[in-house]
Length: 283
Ligand SMILES: [Zn+2]
Image (cartoon, rainbow, N blue to C red):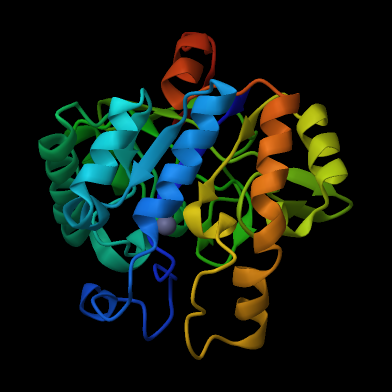
């Protein structure tokens, strides 16, 4: 099962960087979203695949027409939070307010129920079990925030197998579709989006996709945009990680869409035998 998802934010939504962290900073940057989103929607239409788009509430308020296009062209609109803050920094009250604002905004603009969520930077860790209760109370039925390995913004290394599971917390159950990790010797990595997708040659991506039973992709529009401005004052390492391989990413995605079947999140949900998956109880 290969699941096609995109996190819909702009090129300047870089986490944990002093000039791009807060809403007040974002007004200074010019958006590249409408054109890039249209390119992706055209590609999916050409290949006849449906995808799931995790959209920031803030983005939906800036570009309501573009976000309505996602749904109008047959794809699923889900939430990527409202203001792209790290959950483990927010705490329960701020997280709840942010999730509610995002769901409300997206439902008002798109006119459909928002059923799925992905946290910015996969920032729900083992220390934030309350996040799932808040999500369930906001009407979220499916979560895609778990990164079952170590990473810069959180990670949930003890989650267990990278496959769909039911998370149970205080009377609620949430369907979890975690990221899928691959292993090379002692090194765990995710190839289905972000830096490694841009870094690895196509043959390697094809090999890894072929080998996996379950692939959860997470693409960003900026992964495919070689003409985007560069966020000022990034460290050389983050600059490399953020901008390497931009020109080759769209041709690589196009080839993968030719070589493998992909489904959207809700299509995947219908394929999973939920009464038989692993149950994860979080206090
Ligand atoms: Zn994001």
